[in-house]
Structure formats: structure tokens, C-alpha cells
Length: 161
Image: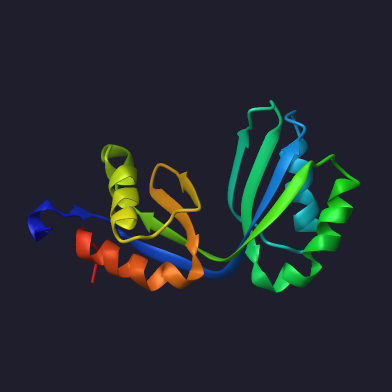
């Protein structure tokens, strides 16, 4: 891609050595996600990249990332959490990384999320989760694909020096 055709972005941030926690089919009602996230917070576990959606059964699914250092305790954590809120299933994916691409003015660039996702796909990088805001696009990817992600993004986008 020529320099003139590249979209300018403000930069890229990487968070590594994480695992993605998926909690499936818990009650889709006010406060349910708050109970789950508060539980992790009370255990001193910082949560990054949070997405929640309603599944085909009408229940809620929640995905978020936490540090890999909690992996040995996660079975006990899930058991304790299931005493607070009913959960059908859980899954851990990892190690993963979060790569965040930020503005300026992403809201004014309608193709930005699609172009980032297409760029990663063309580089053979599978996106495990996507979250956006007014000024950023965040992707969860396999931790071993961060270097390839950086190469693909710098080849296709203008980043600050």
C-alpha cells in the first residue's frame, strides 16, 4: 500500500501474557455482569477488554482478559463465582494479547475497524475478540502473533515515529 493511501492512526498498544475468560449463559438481567466483574475485582484481579452479548438462548455471555498468572487458580475462581451467579459453562483461551489501535478521530473514519480487521486477516492473524470505542479498535489475538500484527499494521497504516 502506498504511503498516500495509508490511513493515519495515533499508535498501537500491546498488552501481553493474558488469558481470555469466557463465561457462558448466565442470567441476562440488570446487575449480572456487575456481579461477575465485582467478584474478580474483589479478588484483586484487573480485568481488560470486556464484551458482553446476549446469546441465542436469551442468556448472557461475557468475555474479558486477565493476567496469565491467575491460570492455576481459575477452576476454584469459577467454582466460587458459580455460587454467586448461575453459569452454564466457562472457557479459558490463552495465552492471548490485546492489541489496541487508537486515533485520532476514529469516529470520522468509517472504514477503520474493517480495514484493521482485514489487514490482520490478510496477514493470517485470527481475531478472537473485537471491541471498539470512539477513538480505538482493540483486538484479542494469540500472544504469539503480536510481532506479525505489528508488521502488518506498520505496513498498511501511517503510525507516528
